[in-house]
Structure formats: C-alpha cells, structure tokens
Length: 454
Image 1 (cartoon, helix red, strand yellow):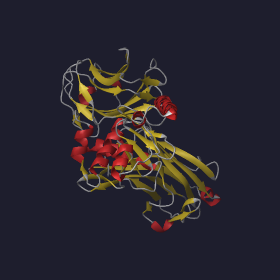
Image 2 (cartoon, helix red, strand yellow; image 1 turned 45 degrees about the vertical axis):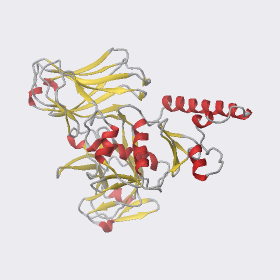
Image 3 (cartoon, rainbow, N blue to C red; image 1 turned 60 degrees about the vertical axis):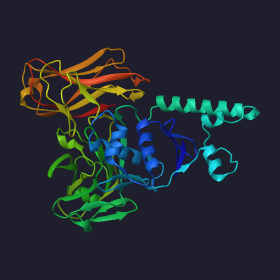
C-alpha cells in the first residue's frame, strides 16, 4: 500500500519512505517503515508503547528506552525535511499517534473510492505498472525506467557514504542547539537574543552558567559539543574565560563533565572550540525525557565585557545498540538498564550481538564503555574484545585486569584487518562482543555503550 503523509510517501510493501516532491529515498530502514506503518494503520487512534515494542521487536525483551530512541530517530528523520509539521504526538502514559492524516495513493483504491478512472499517482510503483495493460506502447518504457530508477536508488542508498546506517547500529547525527530561544541562566537578565546569537551581558563578578536542555534518549560517549563564539576586547582585557560543560541527571543525582578554556585559548575575538565527552561514567547514557544540560561557565575579573554564542551543536558518533539483541553463549540471563549486563562464570561465557547487513561502518575503531566490579581488577584476568567478521575470522584486542583504570572505563580497539569502509551486504552479519580470560569470574560485567570511531 502507498500512503501520502504530509511531504512523504510510505511504501509499506517495499518498506521505504520517499520524499513526494523529488522521489528521493528518505529511508529504507525496515524498522522505520514498520513503526510508521503501525501509526498509519491506527490513525487517528493512539498505539500503546507495549504494542509498538512487541511488533517491532517480537523476539527481544527490549526496554522503553529502545522504543523512545526509535521514535526520536523517526521524528528527527521527518523534521530534517519538514521541520514545521508535527508528525508524531506523544500521548502521555499511553503511547504515540500520527498527527497528520495519511492518504491512500494506491491507484486501484483511488479509482474504487472515487468511482471514476483516475491516473496513477505521482509516485508510480512497479506493482501498479505491472497491473496495467501490456499493449500500451509507452508502458514498457515507463516500467523499465522505474525499475532502473529503483535499482539506482537502492544501490546509491546502500553504498553511498550516508549518515543512515542499517542493522543494529544507530546512525551518527548532529543536534543543532537553537540560539534564538530556550537558553537559561540563574541570572535571566544576562541573556539577550540578537541577530548575531545569544548576547551574554552584563557578566557579574560571580561565574555565570548559561545552558540549554535536551530531553532525548542518547549515548553521549565520544560526542563533541562545539560552540562558535564572539567576545569583545573588554572581555579579553579582563581575563575572561569560558568553560564548556554538560550535566545529566540519573535518579536525581547530577553528573557533570567539562572542558576548560581560559583566556590563553582566546587568540581572536571571533573563534570556536570543542569539548569531547570522553569522561568515563554511566551518565554518558540517558533515557528519554531525562534532562541533560549543555552550556558554558563564563567569568571575568571585571563585569565589563560581553560574549556572544553564535552557534552550538552536538555531534554524536554512530553507536551499536546495547538495549536489545545481545546474547551469551551459555544462555546466561541478561539485564538491560542503561546498557546490557551479565554475570559470566567462565571464559566460555562470552556476550555478543550480531550486526546485520546491509550496513556500513565508517572506520574500524570501536570504543567499548564498560562497567565492572572489583573482581575484574585481577592481574591474572584478561578481557578480550572481539569482532568475528563475515568470513568467520576473529579480530580482537585485550586489556588485563591490572591495567583497568577504574570500575567504569573505555577501551578503544583498532581492528586493523577490517575492511574500510566496513561493508556488510544483505544476509551477511558480523558478531561483536566481549569475553573474560583467566580466573573464573562471578562478578557483573556491563556494556554501557559501543561507539564507532571514524
């Protein structure tokens, strides 16, 4: 069935989403199409979170975080082409519903409903063409053209260096933080919105915190918080300094990390700087609707100068899901809560997940953020991080217990022999995971997140 939904066309049979005006393939991710199809079928009713989760992940016991992440990705995809239209509404405590009425674009259904002969819709699928009379001379040419166009779209979309990555991988993305609204300060009068950006003036003797808040589920390990700034000469002359930070809340307890930038960094009045969120800790992963503040701390000797935030964004690398789809060799129970954890009892108890094709991983370095208990800090223990490629070949890297810096740490593995770019074709898969070596381990091992470093 073909549906017109605002600026888009959904083909439920091919599980693709197109832009109606240009026929550009917006998404061929099956789960995106399935999620949108469920909301279309239920329109104008609400679909419960439980029903969506069961339909999208029938074989996995997933957390609500996974569904929230999928909804967030769909919203981001739609808004990247149509930021003005609210396509999906959250119905508090119940679920989600489609806000815009879908219209059927199936040619035969249109003719039946209107009781008249109507031409095919603007988007003509191969299925509709095949049902037309074969003796029309131009129809064969049109059929060939559409088939070639579809093959071209599929080939381009699967193999081009796109931001959307398939399988069990969340794509990389940029979150643009608005500079014309939604920023806060303990001294609200210090913030003014101007055509240049956010003007912060006057700056008091005390340090001033200026920030904006996000409430979307995300894994921020390896993300880069970037700001373009402009200050006046008085700011520099009065030893003005800036410090980027982000702050999340986990069960009411704040976690905060920052990147210091003092006056020695400010070489010009117009500059930009970046803060990579690489601190270890479970606060790098947040649930949907859990507030996360991104901002800066500003200070100078005399409250004379001013600063302007011209633009700000969060660049989040691609990640491998730790909310569903993991398994152990000996069927040991898994716990999904801000990651995936289990209690191995021997070196045979490895935990891994399959990355299913088609997929394309840019670069071959993988960062594993791990939480362990003290039983792993044993010099005789070795943790093996591995990828088993599509040909059954193992790639691995190691860390011994005596080198583990803390209970929460990040290990970066450079899988040198992985193809670059790492392409997994249709019906292919690779396995990625961890297993302990050495003494028998009974403590908990938790994978908070797995990031693909380009």
